[in-house]
Length: 554
Image (cartoon, rainbow, N blue to C red):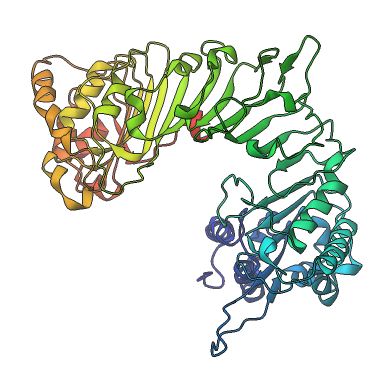
């Protein structure tokens, strides 16, 4: 990893050291990965002053199991191997820098856990990590451990382990667990798995809940009376399907909430779980972003009654709605016109032919990410759903990103107020690009990533088999563009194009010749040498493709 040489200048090494450190320490990284950093630290003393302080802020305890099969002849190691950076940080006297205590258990091994014994073995039981604010569990292993252990022993071990974690980290304000090794929002464990892992999490929640500012109401979550949330709760993640089971769930305070994620909603969210203001008003005064993920409705589910509530969200909020087609909600009841700063919708391309998109009227910019939800592998996508989405008249949204599944460029786009546009396309020849720019008179910034700029590649097996009917509009595009005899894109200042196949540089030069006020052209980095020097002399900056949009990417 750290393939550096001694005695290189500090100004050269500092960004390289920071970049390599990011590779071994990130929100779901492991102790084994951190060992690579320890090797660097020991080998290159002269670069220690360049190490970012964040490398000393995370304590990781990782359990790794090479194999947990029941085959007697298996030669692999079936025992639990524990890795940690605790001794390293303690030796450097950096324990006071630690703000996160992370437990990593990616292997779903059912053997006994005995984590409390590991604390004693490495000497952690004598330490107090008073600056730790976050306790995180990564991976499903914590929930699969000790599956054959009698419940009485599991309870006893869970009590010892939880009490030790609480004594070592007395000032914790956040407790999270993610069953994935990637940083995605988890819906928790699907079912109860009685055992030491579930009991550890529950005990930690019972003790910590009154002071947690970030809470996940996922499985496992305790269902005991007399619990209370912290008044200054700022982040909430909840599995909507658990609400009927949690009969002792206290009302959730809303005054300080900045981030809410609700998963598994069936048609209508249950707002009754939140504290309300006088007059049955549910007001989120500080909310910055909310995720409402809708699931396929279950016929037996009972829908909550929210008719007596008035739900009020602040202006400039960000809203994510995965599974919008499963929602039975008039979003205009929640959000005023153009009050949503960024609306993110995740849907199958077929859904847009019939999907009610009145929610778009509440947004100023949108991110539409296509999701492949086909159950039959023989089903092929056609262009109709995509084309119908572009064809809907829209004069209020000023920015849009369409990505995830490379999709066809349309003949007609009626989003006439767009000022910035980011599209992931399959075939994007220069005439189709010209056709888009010509229709969007206010377009200032256009990012386009495509499979190919050659229409002939529509039948390339590497492109895939979906949207093969895109060629139906090519003649219409040609007819439209051939009738354009003036300059286009009078508002366009920035155009970035990336092609996974060879870039059509000659076509792009033809297109740029019709864009009189273009200031920046971004292209495939390996094609920059093909752009004539005369273009840079004409006042156009030529650079590498970089589709960063502040409204989405921050």
